[in-house]
Length: 275
Image 1 (cartoon, rainbow, N blue to C red):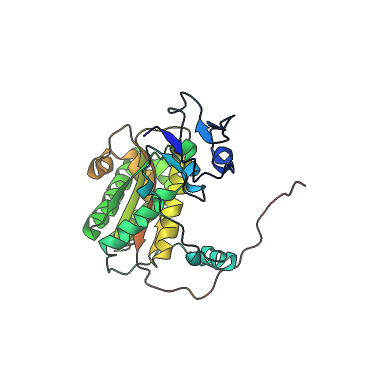
Image 2 (cartoon, helix red, strand yellow; image 1 turned 90 degrees about the vertical axis):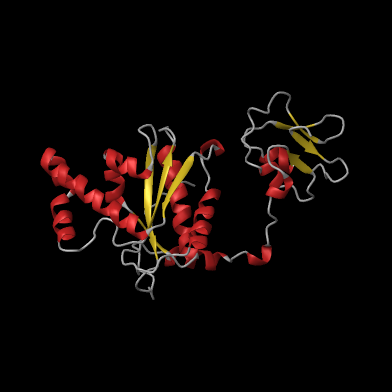
């Protein structure tokens, strides 16, 4: 099977696959009107699958992406714009968690949801560490406090900037302001730091957060943890990350202790319209 093929009997010559190709490597054959790939363009292809996914008749195939890997869209499951807007508005950052762990299959499904996050040039560089054991999540929070304690000793000015004194004091009183008692933690990282690493990571983490919301699982960005893991060798070693790997961010995960019954107000989105 060649890299890109189109079934002459099934193809309607509509040109959708050609126009949707992000890197413009598909063209129409001058004689038949059939879509084809420019000679020698295999290495340019992003493997995004747009050409296959946009084809109504299933005429197009891409060798690196077997046909069985494409799942038909079930239009009856599509949400309305009002439903989508309510879903987005109802998402809250959860900081009070039940101690009941989220089942493994649910965590795996949430993580799968992040696999469809867009990334620059479809490189999909984001990798994940999912801390499933609540005891290890708590251990990580304790290690962040250890890092903060050292920071307060070695770099008082930076420690003051992060406000670590209050966080350490709260921890000693039994209050976890680092990971908020969340049973789970998802960490996104890339194997190297590029110009787009943090953007790709933030998009993937947002997809993860929305997937969690769809499963009725609470999520919240773990800001203090992100700062700490970028600086602490002990934390990186615990997570199995080497020095060249870049931490994009982390989300606390768990069932929310409380439910929300209203959507908070907003003051209006600042925007300039150019018409």
